Length: 185
Image (tube, helix red, strand yellow):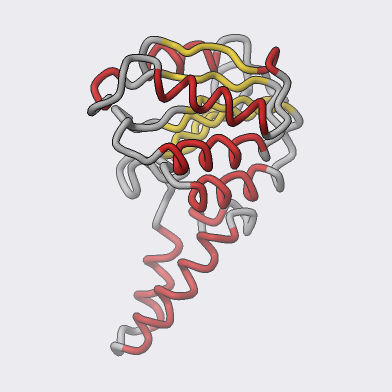
């Protein structure tokens, strides 16, 4: 099942099991269920913004996800820790309509990735009632409080696209780059 990444994405294994049980419960034939599971890909076409994975010419792996909660990010981080790449980069930001505690919680979870580089991003189209650069400042503070060395935190980038470009710049075959995208895929 492509969406399970050879079983490393255990949250997707759990989702596939739940979907299988539901499909069996309503009487769908087993071969149809099997075809669906084998053909469902983590692609922009089948599941946009959910573990969409790309290989750069440099050999780096890029994962694009819309994870916007601590729990969602935790599951992705658990998956990435099962992958062979030894260097990790994350593009991290959040919309301004979240409570400060949720913004801090997302940053604290991001700290668990053990990234060699964390790129904060501004989301100018999703500030809501926040001041410019307020959300990245909250995240930076939370990352440092969670034990991330300040030297590993860069940015904020002025927008998501710039941050994504910063994140993939110089990435090589030992790198996995996690782009948390909330404004555009």
